[in-house]
Length: 399
Image 1 (cartoon, rainbow, N blue to C red):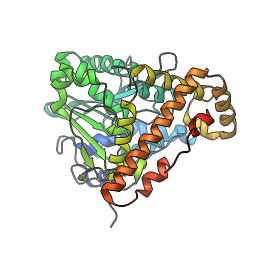
Image 2 (image 1 turned 90 degrees about the vertical axis):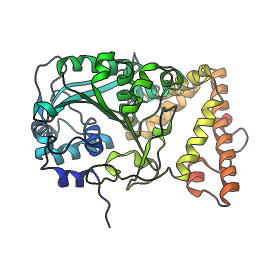
Image 3 (image 1 turned 90 degrees about the horizontal axis):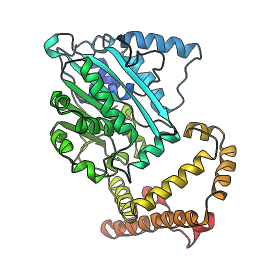
């Protein structure tokens, strides 16, 4: 029997307004997926006193896409296009007015930030302001900013998420719901933890969907502790991104129709009529990979992590591509750029990279062997990812 996803939910609940059937976790993943749609020059920005209905967005986006002015290149944007097409004529969503759209990528500041707002509920007593943050796109800048979380307590996108929330909260006096997928969920929690106390008091719920955690300083802050009880955190059974860094609470595990890394895709999450389908616990493969990564990261100080990440970013930038999508479109040129980038890295940094990458494979090998002893069988899926044996000096010889 085919398992239901968010598109099935739209068919089931599409005739029920938010006044009749309140916002729930499935609505959360629908709007979180919608955030990946490129809405530039379509949805009004924060300086505009206007809104654009989802019905109008679906029509305008289709027109621009058909005229070849707009074509999503990554899977998240493609899925977002499917979502807006599905909800564009549905009573529950079509009248929701979108506004405050921001899409700001700044390589110099190493920041990738995007968000939008909408008011849900027609009747005044039931109205809420929904603030949705986009996750990481395929840009190198967005990827670099995510990795920066490993050694700093706050990144530029998190600071902008706080500022954005406070500004839009002043525009609408309604109770607040925050949501986001991947880094977007991280931004939603961070903004709710560090915003003005008067704004924080209006927040009724924060939805985090397979989102990375935080630096220990954030977890220990008073603002984080104050909002934690209103956070709804979800991860799929094979979660990787959502288990990174530290979290203040155990997330709810959700079933997915996909496997392994592809479970990060919200469109693969299984749903019920009013919620997400609980999956019990993480898969053994997910737990193993996350144990490997946590142990590996813990072996190096913040300065070593910083140098390693800076070197990787320098190599990627040397390809003259701006995103992984561009990198994959011409892999031969990318390979030439990567080789050139490696040549331009100094000897001490190469040595550090070799040490860190070598330690990754040692840690993986140790954890795989430990799992074999516990279970009495091989983990073929995980070994296919990491490799079962790495010759001494293999990483160093490559660098």
